[in-house]
Amino acid sequence: MSPVPRYRRYRCFLALILALLGLELACRFFWKATQGIPVLHPERFVQLFYPQLKHSHYDAPPPEEAFDVLILGASVFHEDFGNFEAMFERELSKRTDRPLSVCNLSTPAHTSRDSLLKYRYASERRQFDLIIVYHNINELRANNCPPEIFQKDYGHYAFNRLANAYFEHPALTATSLGATVYYVLNKLAWKLGLLESIPRGRPNPKWLEFGADIRTAACLQDNFEAIIEDAQERGTPVLLMSYTFYIPDGYSIDRFLAKELDYGTSELPIELWGTLENVREGLEQHNRTIASLAAEHECLWADQNASVPKNAETFNDICHLTGRGLESFIVNMMQSIDHLF
Image 1 (cartoon, one colour):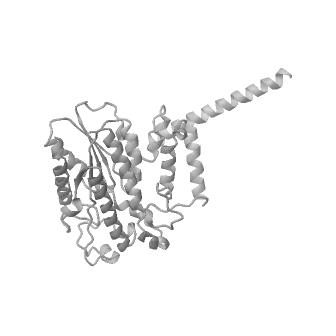
Image 2 (cartoon, helix red, strand yellow):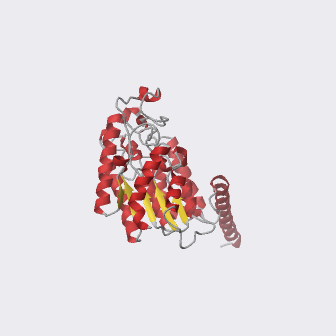
Image 3 (spheres, helix red, strand yellow):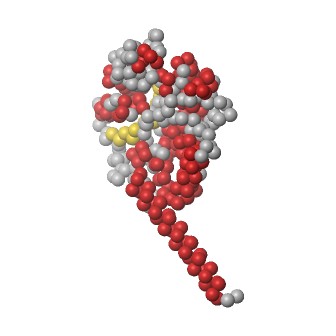
């Protein structure tokens, strides 16, 4: 064989390698510029879905003697809906002289599935002294779809389908180029209607009837149990709480929007999660599941739904709390964890 064709093949092969390296670097610098994902750590591509995970990394680690708390929840603990984190830290500081480190990964609209994935990531990097899990209502939105679409890992949301893939298949984040190609292909598939998903916001009105089947009770149980069992293997106590909610008599969407109900600021209507009847039933089913898990696994427990007063002074809507409501909520939490100090 002539050396010329062989040389050409080598040159083409080298050109391909250099092109792939160039694309890899371009992807890494793109995600660094747009999402803050470190250039040298493509495995942190999962932070594209959960930017809160950046809080589980420290430029300077906390002191070894710090009391380190991981909080897993949704909007009730998020700064957009109140001052929970600062109020909670203030109460902790009254009970211990140890330095405090609170990693609050709570995010509006997130579910127990999101918290399970975030927990797995954070617990690989830090040893916590206490884990707090508080979920319920956001699961209910996932029920508003036909049974053939519903997926136990909430993969019938486009967001969760992608997040699940990156967490369950680490090879996808071995290179930034591979992670990017998979991401783009999935986005195109949804755009072209090749993959079906349900909205993470207001449910599809045509599918509200399916929300009567509370399939998410089993999902919530699986997600909570995975967190609890792993944490207890690590020797970390877990605080579970019933989900406190308030539905005033005579609730309707019209009265809510007109601010005629016994709520504070009237933040979010119940219809964001489903019909009134389905949401009420779902919340109660989920609370029974959580209470059962707490008893079975001997978790720390606070019955928030029975303890937080229900009126406009404590609730801004079905689940978000006023300042006074958060005070009552945190008092109940502290009664459950005081013995840790």
